[in-house]
Length: 397
Figure 1 (cartoon, helix red, strand yellow):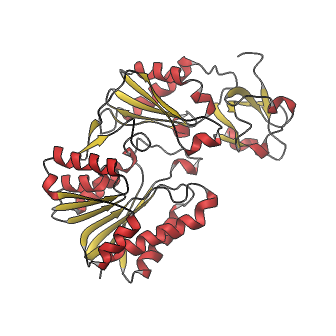
Figure 2 (tube, helix red, strand yellow; figure 1 turned 180 degrees about the vertical axis):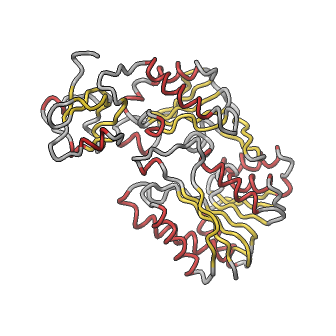
Figure 3 (cartoon, one colour; figure 1 turned 90 degrees about the horizontal axis):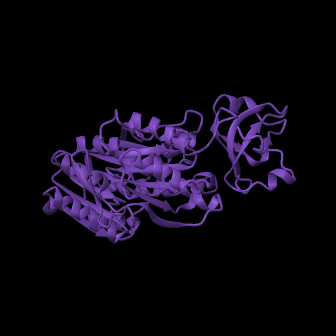
């Protein structure tokens, strides 16, 4: 270990045992701050000590963030270099190799894969790297080298998003290796999706909903399906692959709906797939007023409660989604409601959905609770890594 590596120390009130037992974050008010610690640059590597100056772990530091330190390695003498990054990625890749989906999956899921703040989605021989923490942003080339070692020829740096702002990072997108101009064709659950890696949301496709797509598709044989907040086809295309008669996709993004329609065309189901662009709340209201009914309705909105300050408003928004979606479900049909807000835990989200369904005057059974797929592992001590919830109700009347 570099003997000049800086050290940061926990305050006496901080729970050092929590770090020893695997918790990956150190909050700013748990750290002793002095001239030396305040002088550390975002992304610097340091040794974390307990209040008695016993070394606990190797961490990356950002004193400008509410998360002052993130644990990189339980070994205080670990060397954080390209070889270390490649080893972590290889470990993650070994797990994904045992999962269905081939070379199309989330390869790195941040803290849960031992790479704090890092998200990598793989699309065959292409990958999108999102370094949402300063230490990783400074080492983007090391990540690209490691991905090349897996046979990935195209690596896109997608340096955008709300999380980067909290780290004081600037936005920007560029190819680190290779480059693709056309959307990537992705097969999931028998459906065909088109992922726009450079112009789409996040990394271009949401792999986390794969098992929930499959569950809804199993309910959709012969059904008329409504997919609200559809993005590039999500649940609707999966439902068509599962035997749905028709699917209507609603989203505010014209480019996303265009990709969804092209996916239906590639599946040979363009005649059974329709899109409608506009505000989802307005369109659900209009469909209800027109007396439209569907056998399966899905609403998979963006994160209405991305952090605790937005929780109250976010829960009201989820309740409103449920209230507007429930009347669109035919008697005996199914309603799937989703949340990707980690601040809205499962009990709070479920309560909001139940209130909304009740306010719509519908009686329901909760038949299934879904989460992200196994390529999105959950850090057992970090609830934020288990953000996705998908509730499927059967509406009885």
